[in-house]
Each structure stands twice: as C-alpha cells, then as structure tokens.
Length: 486
Image (cartoon, rainbow, N blue to C red; front, side, top):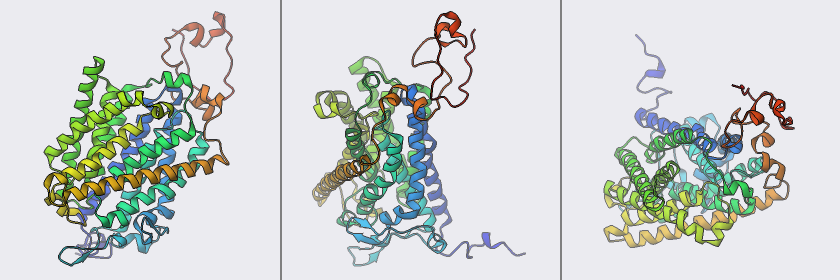
C-alpha cells in the first residue's frame, strides 16, 4: 500500500533537512506571539484606557498588526535578516517567492568562525516561511507596544503612515544589527529575544513619539480610569502566556535552551509581579490590579534579553530588580523629572519597556552563564559575574544600548517630522473631546458616560420628557444599542 507523499519520511514535502518537531514548535511559538498582539494587546489597550478611547486604542493595535505583516513580506524581513547592505542594515527585497519560502531557513549574514576555526551559519531545520512569520510577530508587537505611548490623541491617519515608515527605517536596523548578522551581532552583544530590539526600541521610540505628538487633553491626563479592569486582566493573561512562545521560540529549535527560556520567563514575571504589588501595598496601603499587570510586564521584558542564558536563581534576581527599579522610575522619579512630566506617555511604555528592557540587557551582561551561552550564542562569552571576559561583555551591552537609544530617537523624530508636513500628528480638539464617536463613528459600549450612575433624566430613551433637551451626535452613523428605562 502506497503512502501519500505528504506523510513519507523523505519526499518533496518532507525534505531530508526538515525537523518536524522544530517546525511544529516554531509555528506554535509564532502563534503564541501573534496571540499576544491579536487579541492580547488589542483587548488590553481597549480596556485599560478611558471608555471614550476604547475603540481607537484597539484599532491602532489592529491596524499595526495587519500593516506590519504586508510591509514585512514585501520588504522588511530581508532588510532585517537578508544580505548585508550596510553593517547595520540588510538589502530590502520581497519574501514572497515560492522557491525562497520552501527552502531551508537561513540567516545569510550570521556566518561566523568559531574558536576552533570552523565556520557556521544560523540554519534552523525548517522552511524559510516559518522563520519569516515568526519574526513578523516580533516586528508587529514592537509597533503595538510603541502605540501605548500615544493612545488617546494621535491622529489615526498619522498613525497609519507612521507604522510602515517606522518598521522600515527604525525596526529593521535594530533587528539586523543585533540578530540578522550586523555589526553588533558579530561583536558579541547579547539580545536573546528582544530586550533591545523590541522593548528598549519601543519604549524610547514611544517616548519620542509622545513628545512630538503632544499631550492628551488636560481632563484626560488628570482622569484616565480603565473602562474594564477584568477585561484588562484577560488581555494581560494572553500577553503573559504568549511570552512562552516569545522567548521559547528564540533558539529556533525545540531544544533544551528553549525549555530553560520558558521556565525563566515565567519565574521572572511572577517574581516581578509580587515585588511590584508588595511595593504598592507598602507605599500606597493597598494592592493595585493595574500595578500587578505593570509588574508582570516589567518582569517579562527584563528576562527577555537573557531568558535562555541565565540560571533560574538569576531569573528570580532579575524579577526582584524588574519589579522594583521600574516601579521607582514610574512612581517616584517620573514625578520629579520635568522632562517626563512634560511628555505624556499614556501607558508608561518608557518605564515598562525602555527601563525594564535596558535593565534586562545590562543584567544579562552580568549574569549570563557560560555553558548556557555556549549552547546558542555565536561568540563564546559570559556575564561579568562569572569573571573572565564577562566585564567586556557588560561594556558591550552598554554600547549596544546607547546605539539602540540614539537610533530610535533620531529615526522616530525624522519620521514624525516628515509625516507632519502632510498630516497633523495630533487629533483636532473636537475629536479629542468626544473620542471614539468622533474619530470612528463607533463606541465600545452602548452605555452612558465614564463612571456615571444611571440617571433617567440624562440616560433614558425619553430623557426629554424629564425636562432635558436631547440632541443627536453629528458623528453617529448607525445603531448604538438601546437603554431601557426600568
């Protein structure tokens, strides 16, 4: 009895180089990371903001996810992981051809010479299509994280122009430099899964964008309560659970290093959440659900640059520091800094991603374990805690952070100044006052205003019968639900 070629051990659809386990895990990890954005951050953003901005915040994330994918396969992937154009940038080209996508995955500029003189290249045991999609999910979540800094006032048309430009001229530079075989990769800088490429970049670019876009309305800055705390927790839960794919997929294989990364990721996140919550109790007298989510986030971000390279006791140390240092920067230093007070970073992305990502990168330079480094890194190295060349590694982490910060400040500024020539970066005042209904002609809930209790004279269907004039919104284009007068 003949077996279909799809199920043979070796056939055109199962080439000899394909490792089905690695491929299955890489596609699973890709899906987990994609779920962090869609629907994870879409839900988180929609629920953590004031009700009048729920639709707009969710849409910014939704649009970024779709736009990044198309730009990624048309140009971006090979700018980040293709042939070298400059020491920090790859040659842009489409990643759409059948021959290219079904060939074995390969990062061409990753070729390096080991200490024993043997040359090796990053070549996972699965097709290029799996690698292209996995790296897309990282690019998409970076833009969505950046959006958290400008929620509640950025012109949606300006955002639609910003996403592809920032992906091409900012994200691909960091990705190629640190992951795609650029100068920082070959120098031996460690960024296991995106502490610098994703989190430091999104935090710094977000703060820069917030500066150029301008602040929210004064009333929104003073009072910006979440419209649904429980739904916010659902989005945060998807983010946390998806991080196992985020860091577990970084080795490009279902190997022991992936297992270490997944365990360390969750240990650090739990530790950081508990430390942040404890500080809230000590300082404010009560635990905060939003604070717990912030602590979870900083823990996940901090472990990312070294998830598969540090021992699990070190993951606890990193969790303690990521639950405390970003807490201090957000709760204390932010209030004392004139610059941070002036720049309206809506969700505090600078603290949760830039500070925590920088902290993680530096701690990796201290705590990276030599044997774990030898399992995956192109250059044999160790953290400063283990002596030897570790001190040099820490300095490399510092230099790489400076490069990433500088590039993101400059590139984000130039992109926004260019967009501003054609599109205002900030919404008009009338849209800022009304919110979703003015921007999209839609509202998140068919309910009354933020935090208001039911009042028949204001909220009933026949409110005018109680002496109040009712007027139709000029922005309504359809049904908004029914409020029943009980």
